[in-house]
Image (cartoon, rainbow over the protein chains, first blue to last red):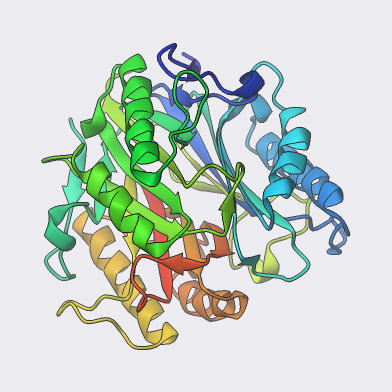
Length: 132
Length: 132
Length: 132
């Protein structure tokens, strides 16, 4: 069995189907809890702007998923903590390119700060895949 | 097996038992990850005030749960992102009416903003139910 | 099967291995969703400072885990909502003492407020353990 998206007709559809109102994970699946990722590059430096940080975050998430035998299509929920409302638009634009055909459930909010003043966004996620 | 609430006597009880300190989901359950819901009505307009937005959010969640063969009693965790501390009280009052006898684990925080300036609160949740 | 940590070499390692980039939960596990904990003591009073609140939160989480037959090593994801970036450092220092050898995936953000003006931090978590 595979994850199933739920977008009931009784409520307004997700904007341009770029996310799912809900994703169901069948019994018998393993879950992967991904820590809040930031724009830290492999050498430890931080990407200087929001676009670069989001791209690095997605690269980090891709590497984490691969290490667990998963891909973006297995992400069921992804959460973003941005520093400004307009940053959510930038984040979502980059994020959406990774989820064609299998959008996750999403949450995105504006927070007052993150642990490091150089970080402009933090993104965590849950993925799930059938099998042990 | 069903979800089980944990409220150990060693710690202060949840206020008026309106939430659970923790909810355990047995193995062999399916999980439902619900995206951040906002007060968008089926016609795409946004409910104008906080009470209306929370009512619409709960209606949206009810429709999503029903689409997945679940109900409010299957929600194990619900998170609210409000714009003011006093709004958490309003949100919780409406939320609690939906969970009589089977309160979920909850988190509620005040954020600086949401993606759309018309949104006053965003609520996401995880539900789980025994069976495939 | 047990929970598995994923820290792929392709991305920057977690700082001092005090958290995991991701934790995988095998199929056949039960999940425990822990509500946002605050520094409320068993008598209902609130610990007066940040350190005291974090210590109380960790004591609360320990009691909740024990009630569910789990321990800190079973926590797969822990999230903190602080009121200042420097508070994340204080929180993480206390938190880390509880996770030697089995760090969870983490997220920590700065929010504008919490439900009660006396609360300086709120922490929620997900734990998981093999077996029904």
